[in-house]
Length: 166
Ligand SMILES: [Fe+2]
Ligand SMILES: [Fe+2]
Image (cartoon, rainbow, N blue to C red; front, side, top):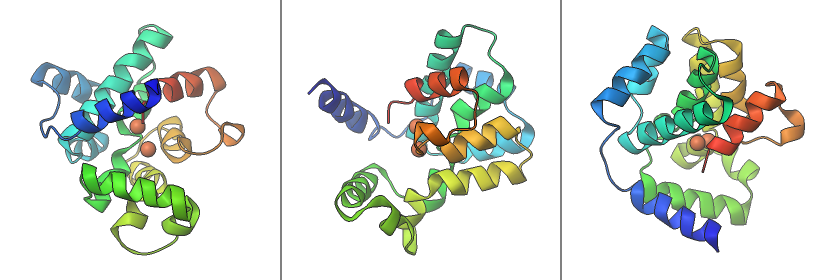
């Protein structure tokens, strides 16, 4: 029940269009490589707000300073969502449909819903081409996969996973 209430709050919050405040944007830009910055800037306002919230939670969990590639992973793990250009209500529909029809089957198709469901692989590929650190790329690729398959060091992966509320 608490989980449902949390998801409803997240949904309502993600209908608000703006990005994070200017001082947070400056902080984010200071953490990212130039190629990563362009990818982060292209994310939707709600996705950028989510990314900052995750990065700040990782900081409070691991204690500052956090290694830059770990912060980049927190900030960019969902960056592949931009490719589908789906907004929040459509994303909810896709997520529900994937729960009914099977995520893997839907992700294997064409179109924007499949692209959205493959945001982990799409994001990881773009970050690799942008010159991101191997850890940043690995977490982006692995963040929806089973824990037993993670290659990121367990303490870092656990902090990134616990900080991600979607
Ligand atoms: Fe994700
Ligand atoms: Fe996320």
